[in-house]
Length: 320
Length: 250
Image (cartoon, rainbow over all chains, first blue to last red):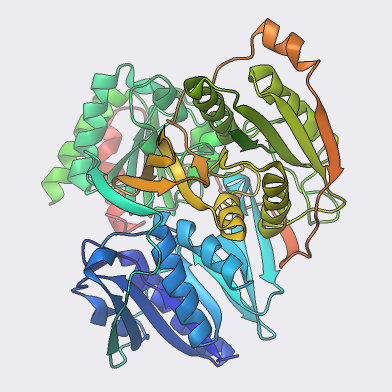
């Protein structure tokens, strides 16, 4: 094959997302370990920060450009990536496990007869093969697996791999491309009110039944604002209609790995713990000292959320 | 129109997961199995679509697995699905293998509209729907929270980071359902009774060699309980100090 690892970058509104740099960095490291060359591909209209990928060890960047490709179209994007991967005989493809990556990877992997391992939290080279670790059962277990197909596709969980700076020279090739197939296309984007999504946030402040009423989530929002964090919620409050399901953390919501997870008034049902226990630091604030959440929390305060959260918000604000 | 709904049989989300002695599977002892929660949204949407069309459309539930999956198929039949197909497998398939088996059956049945959960809560792959569509050359919209069908035209809202994409596509199409798409109905007593008369066709799945080799499963590293810093707001100062100086996360 072409001895190439291909990184698929993701842009939104003309700007590469942070997870694209994480992916580039992982690919650059794999390329070194496997003795392969690394290349990146992006699709869109203008992309302002494309050259930044070179900071993380990937200099060879191909930009397929067309104004009608500014928004993601699964059919068109999949066709372009497939065609390009074939042209350069990519051995490995790698993309971030975002909504974009999750949607694109399986389509491309079928067309390339590539095996596909999703949501990897560790990729290691052992005897020339990539061993991937991925959480299953929402993190209640971890699976180590490898791919036997000639072409191999991995998606990596955002926020887990820290991008390592290793500057190389950016060589961007821009190719004007016809739009191959827009049978499926995005015609509009409805922005959510919340600023940050739990799946992408480095800090998450989550609330549960301990908050008593939907209005009391204001306390959670204020603390999240002070920390620049995303707001999360337990399944109980989502099922009760207090919060949108996009905020739900846990087995039927999102599985997250932030640096800091602050659980307020959340007892810690097994489904919830599965979705957040891989956070680097966990803080629990709950009045029940026997709540399971304290079993995995690094720091706990056994007490009233209505008393403690405003004080915590105040203390954080005074730091800034 | 024939509408397919693909369903899987998974451990209850409240179940503790233990690793089997061979280190490659989970230990099924004491595990309760249920219909995959996301597939319930898929079943509901398939049934609502059939009811809205109000014609002679039928809904077929397809499941890949073994005899135990019949429980889950029966649940779908009790909710109102017309008939079921069990595609039996000898060994565990990877996502591509499942997609291939489903694709063959969808093609054989002539289903132009397919619903399935956005992921199974066992292996959490979230890719079977898109793979099935790529095999069949159907369009596919994943992680859908709103679905509208108008003739051949489909408009969906799909949940992504920070908002919802409005996506347009045409039949034939696969929709993968996200929580929020609808409120799945409960099976009525009448539904449960009439499900007994509905057929579950059993056949061997088309099996493909797996691209994935499982090396082993393990439990995530156990997290040790940390420190309780106090029982009132006087602990806040210490918490902030630890987050800054020890954890270095703020």
